[in-house]
View 1 (spheres, rainbow, N blue to C red):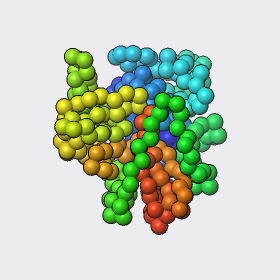
View 2 (cartoon, rainbow, N blue to C red):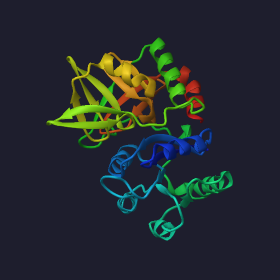
View 3 (tube, rainbow, N blue to C red):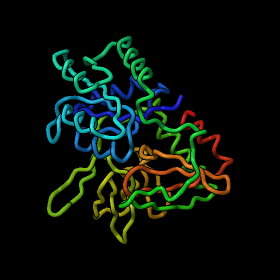
View 4 (cartoon, rainbow, N blue to C red):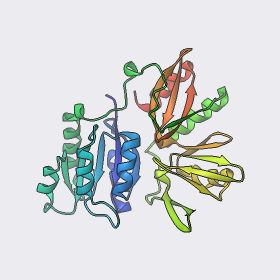
Length: 288
């Protein structure tokens, strides 16, 4: 059964970590991001196309969870929404917004199992990670305003990349519960970019560009320094100029010559070739 791309949106780190732990090992869903902002969640959904979003109602800045649900309701690919709240007072509001489920936190194990059953029941409505039989020949496929960066990987580099990908998506390992953030000076303001919102980092002379779903920020950090900082958070150096967030690898396509390719999310995407002899290992990592 193909996995549903899943986002966790909640202001409390303990809740995000607990949702990750509850979903760990369940093949129905694959967590591909966390955020504390409904505005960022909307931009991530545009780039990634989530099938499921676990979300709260209230956030310190920007849209509320209800406003996000209204915005997503008008989108072409509406994800399934699982609202999380401390009591039952907002259940009616959640289901009026089309929620798949409403969880009173913390839920008991049996109650969480019912949530997974509801996700499975309505699964046909959600965007899914494609089955191998659905992989299509790669074409231009890039919408106006997008850019694709095609990288080459040697045999040893492919092995290292697949090993890093396996470790990044192995949630039996202990993860830090807090979302780390990268400070970036932008027009005199200090922006704090959550690591989970970074798709990749690109070296530029003695500086680096940090790419998110719809923006890029010039930083004074060298790529080597960012590799040391971001490496423990599921980032992998795929090229001398590029550092990729492995959780943002969201697409697979076939290439001429019996090879396959992985793509990252975002307006500017990175393509990474994987040879056919490694495809069985890749499928095992992806749970296919």
